[in-house]
Every structure is written in structure tokens, then in C-alpha cells.
Length: 467
Image 1 (cartoon, rainbow, N blue to C red):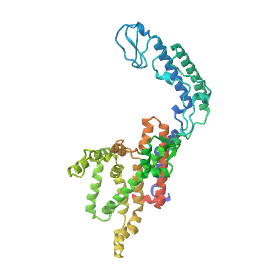
Image 2: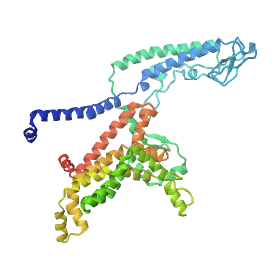
Image 3: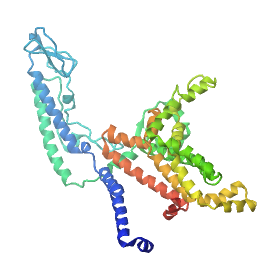
Image 4: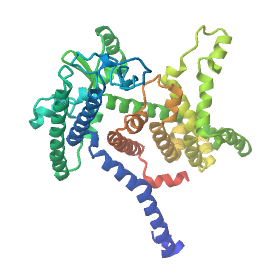
């Protein structure tokens, strides 16, 4: 700090640190705090008051539809006319001879006390299951809050159905007000959204299929760590944790593959090639990345499609008779991820290797060290900060990859955790659970990065050598 103050002055150093603090606050801390707040807040639609409010709305809609239906003329008085589409396939004649909409595909006559099927009337019952932990016994609205067991039966006269629906609406309204007040005074935060990540789901599977799955290595691994188990003769899996584990494993393997491929490239460019030729090798690496990442990912689809370049070439050579389903192979995603993020591995390693005095390598060779020992004792220890930065950057990008697995697999492979988070936010409109998944994923990735830095004996100040 004293060196910075002597070199740049107190004012400039204060401005610099203020800018860094604002950057960290606005782009790192506040977004994570916002995500955490949403993660520990129960979704409104899962609150007991929301269920009571939904019951009230269903009952009121049922009343409205029943009154409309009861006000329609009797079918026996109808004289022909043009049918008008309705909420159902049933046509009830109007006074003008035209058919009036109804709510069902059923037909009815004036002698029958029944009415057509109405969804809201079917849902207007006080015996509704509450949102609770899926691993516990179900809880019902009427039993939990002492409401009478009421439902709208379609076999009684319409006025009786309206009266029952009104009674349900009144009971739901009173319960809603009471629950809303109680929830306003209760502690607002909960860990239920995080429990969704650990929840076990029943997997319907035949005995024959279960035997086949249990014989696979992945299922054996899931059983060993408790992510797959049997209960009462049924198979259960903790799907959220399985997706998380699989994604992290894939990201680690993709990072390892990138390191194996990029270390020789960085060594070749930095230490084993004359400077003029190294420039051309560098250009060969950089030029493809002038194209937008999304376009490069889509370009791979023309290579791996059933009628793509690889299958066309192998069929032309007579190596295969049927196209290879590359879209179903996880290895394809690995290759595309490595290709997409290869520069994030190459550049840090190259930058550090380029600072190594080549005389050290020559001296080691003169003393009889072979190529493996030169790399193990001289090059790798010197390049360790670059390797650490490259692995961390590639791992974080691979773990958060969305476009690559989505486009390359096209739904034909198990989804990555980033896709699960996206689905929670936008497909199922369950952003609170999505926020819990996202925050947990961030913490897990940070822990893995810290463990990697500890194993590599790398400190933050060592990363300055990469620049």
C-alpha cells in the first residue's frame, strides 16, 4: 500500500480503491444478496393464503359459470340455428335459436339435473392438498384449518351447486384473511427452497429396467453416495443433487481435457518455437475466436448432425452404415466446451511460461535431465499460477455453460445444472427455487475453486504473475 501511495499519491489510490469497492458491490455483492433474499423467500403461490385465495377464485368462477348456464333456455325449446363456439364442445340453445357456450363436451337435456363439466367447479373443494415437504405425509386444507368438507357435485340441481360454491367461497375468503394476517406477522424467511435441491423423487421403473440401471457405473455411484435408494419397493432419486453432481463432474473432466490439450500448445508457442513462427501459431489460435461464440457452437451442429460432416465422411469411406448419434454422446459436449473455452486455458499458461528464462531449460538438459524431468522440475512449477488461473477460468465457464449443452444435445442428453436453473426461473416460473439452486451452485463452485487453489498451493498474489 505504501508503494502505491508513493507512486500514485493518496488521491489517485483512494479513487482506485473506491472504484474497486463500487465494482465489487454493484456486480458481485448486491446481486448475490438479492439472489439470496429470493432464495429464502417462500413462493407466493405456495403460501397457505395463496391456496385459500385460489380456492375462493375457483368457487367464484364456478358460481358465475353456473349462473350463466342456468340462465340459458331449456334445450327442448330450441329451434335450429347456427352454433356459437363455447368454452366446451356442448351447445346450449339461446332464445334467438343460436347455441350458447357451455363448459363441457357433454350434451344435456332439460330433464337431467346434471350440468356440463366445469373445471373451476371441480377444483372448488375444501379438500385441497397443501404445499409441504414431498417426503412427509400429505396435508389437506379442510383438515389443517378445521373447514367443513365441501365440494360442488354435478348431480344436484344447479341452485344447490351455486349455494355450495358460495359457501366454499365464503369459507375460503375468511380463511384467506386470517392466513394473510398470520403470515404478515410470521418470520418471512424459510429454507424450504433449498430443500427442493435435496428432495427425493420417485422414479417409475419396471423391475427389468431397474436391474439394467443398477448394473451401470453411474447408478452404482449414486447409490454409494445416497443419491439413489429404494423405499417400500420403489426407486427414489435426489434429482437435483444428481444433476448438480453430474454437471460438476462433467465440468471437471472438461477442464482436465482442456489442460491436457492446451499445455503442449502453450509450451510449443512460448518455449519451443522461434518468435516469428510463434506469431503464426498464435494467430491460428485467435482467428477462429473472432467469430461470435454462439455462431461457433451452431457451426458444430453441422459437423455432428446425422447428415453432417463426420457422418457423411465415415459413410462415404464405408466405415459405418447408419449415422452415429453424436448428439446423444456426452463426449461431444466435452469437445465443444473445450473448443469454446480453449483460449481461457492457453493464454494464462502461455503468459507465465513466456517469462521463464530458457537458459534454465538448457542448463537442466546439460545436466542430463530428460524432457519429463524438465517439465516436472522447471516448467510446471514456474507455470503453476498460469495453470491454476486457466483451470479455474475453464472450470467456471464449463460449470456455467448453457448454450453449448443446450444446442449440442438438443434435449437428447441429461440436462446440465445451468439448464435446470433456467427452467426453474423461466419454464416453471419458480424463481425462488431457481434462486436457491443458483446461490447453492455459486457457493459449491467457490468451495471447489478454493480446494483447487489449496491443492495447488496457489495464493491470490501468485496470479499477478499471469498478467
